[in-house]
Image (cartoon, rainbow, N blue to C red; front, side):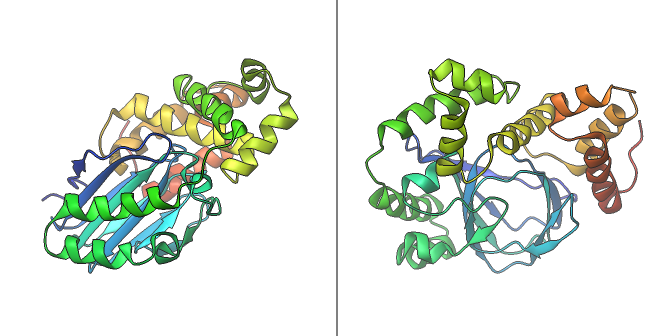
Length: 269
């Protein structure tokens, strides 16, 4: 398989407000991709393989290993050697709060602490090639931990729906007004259910939506993302519009572009 052509196999397993779907990647050769900050968390199981996650703003690199994270506020480059197996459970935006876990914004936590013995059972199923069974082990463990949603959680779910519907192009004031609450209430909800400030969450969703509009669905290949960012950064767009459209100010956008270019070479635009 050519580099950057990683192939995901989707597993349809959905629990509204908790799990959106699952996926599995089996070997396939070296690959690189951009993980977009789309407002979702991830529960991941990795068997063997050697990979890393590179923060495009700081340049920090961490192992691409078994764990759980909340939402990301910036894009990350995943670099894989192509061996091993990876299973991912894409979490709904406020899923970690729904199971009583911390938000883990831009951070990874212990998967076993979240799903307990189900992690071992899922790993065994994954090793045996029973991918759907592995996914269901993890999803069932999450469902077992789920707490009864409060009225605030239900109302915040409507806020999340509107953010997705508007691709992040909505202000905290507009969100608060739409739900009939104060901006202070919205800040409290976002910190409680996501662990992030509203501005950071909205900026992340805007960036992911901006990139998706340019490169389409599926795997976000570094070269395609780089080309989109390079074109935009050279289009002499006013700084305020850059931040409104991409969620990043011009300096941050350029830094992300440079980090990706360091991995794949400069874009041809």
